[in-house]
Length: 372
Image (cartoon, rainbow, N blue to C red; front, top):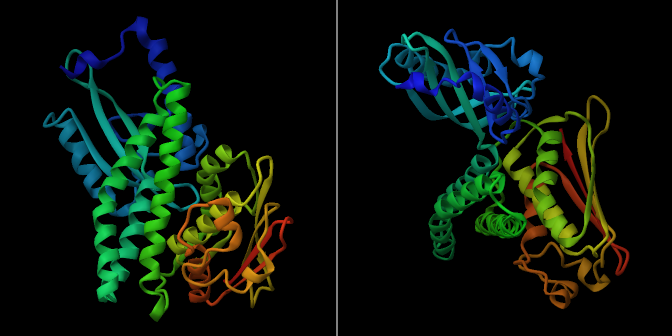
C-alpha cells in the first residue's frame, strides 16, 4: 500500500534530514502541483532560492514541450491508475537555461486513500546529456561527409557512445553515494577523469574527419559564462590530481549566438592542455569578458598557465593536425595532437580568431576572440 510510505511521527526528523542533505534534488509537491518544500540540491539545480521555489508550481519549472506529458502522468496517479512514475524531463532554470533531469515521483496517500502529496526526486543529467549530444552531433557530421577513412572513426564512435555514457552515469551516482570510502572515492575520481579524457578524444577525432570541408556549427543563444563555469568545474578533477589550482573570472552572464557544444569543446581542450603542461603547485587562469562596443561586440576567452611552455621551433606547428611538440613527447603527455587543431577550426567557423603566446619555462597563454 502507498499509505505505508508516509513517515511515522518518530521518523519525521530522519526523513527531513535525509531530504535536506541528499545530493539528489528532492521536493514535496501538493496534489494540485505546487511545490511545498524543496532541498538545496534542487534549488541549486534550478537556480531558485528556496523561498522562491516554494511559490512556484511544477508546471512553471517544466519545459513547455514536456508539460502535457507531466499532466497526463499526474492525472493517472491521482486517479489511482499508478502509484509512481519515472521519466526523463526537461526543466527550465531561473536564467532560462534548459537542464535535463531523471524524474522519479511517488504519490503518498493517507490511510483512507486520499492524496497527501507527491515526493519528487530529480537527478541532474545535464552533463551526461550534453556529453551524449556532443558525440551524436560529431558522429552525425562525420556520417554526412563519410569517406573510407572516416567510416572507421564513425564506427568506433558508435560503438563507444553507449558504454561511455552508461559508465559516466554510474560513476556519477557512485561518487555521490555516502557509502563510498576515501579509497573508493579516489578510484571513482580517477575513472571519471579517464572517461572524460576518452570522451574528448572521440569528439576530437570525429571533428577531425570533417576538417577538409570546415566545421559545421549549429548556432543558438547560449550563456558562455555558465558554459565556462561548468567546464572549469568538470576540469577540477584533473586539476586536483595534478596539484594545479584553477582560477576563473567571468561575468555573471554572457549570452551569444553560437554553437554551445562546440564552444564547450574549445574550453575543454584549452583547459586540458593548460593542466597537462602545468607544474604541481601551479595555477591555471581562465578569463572571459565582453569586448568591443555595442555595434561590434564579441567575447574574449583567455586561458593561461605558468607551465613548461612551448619550444620556439614548435610554435608555428601547434595548430597542425596530429602535431606533438617536443615537450609533449618529453613529458609523455597523453593526447592525439588534435586539441589545438580542433580549437582553431571551431573558432574560425564562428568567424573568430585564436592566438597563442608561449616561451619555454614561462607558460602559455591562448587568446580566443569570437564576434557576438
